[in-house]
Length: 267
Image 1: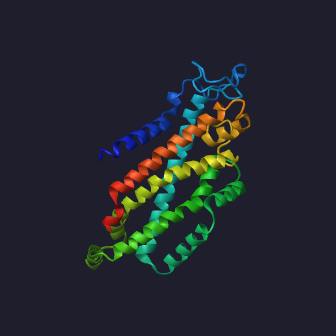
Image 2: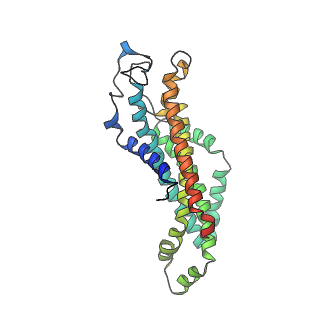
């Protein structure tokens, strides 16, 4: 592994580890209420304090990593895979299918992504799944556009013509020659997109359109603590700082990956 990338992969790996094994890392039950200890400031027992119901904020932030980060990664895997496949097929086949799907993507791209997601999530109703579905409806278009552009470039390469002339089937050519060659730029785009998706999911939850209480989710936790910013700032600052750190780590990782791979020189 590139030495410059190692610290960023390590930091991202730690965050993913915390998200996957969150239930084993929480010092207290993130759902247990203790009204007598409500809104306790950070102390030796509750390192990040407690919320209005006396729940340990550190435990809820750790468990919130599982909700927020895992949901974001799953959503990213879906939209990047589906979008890339659609774009590759459109770039390879062309014709009416390409025209219809690309005009459909143009329609979705005409809407601001967050505004569309708010409208879609509001129509579908609250819940983390509905929020993710609302983002997925419009999120695939970016990857479809990138994959189609890269596929059109690959079609002009000599090895592509050789594969087609030698009798290669379309699915085989896509699997062996197109998808592996567009994977690098797609992976970099996905790495840069993780932070945006985390912010969007947290934003929908903050507006009450994502994860619903008592599920620990960083955006929902900030929403529940917004009225206590002056009296108990730790309630909203802890999940906000968790979002900041996570987004910063994945954005820096994406930037370093883009520099390391230098995808433009591959084509």
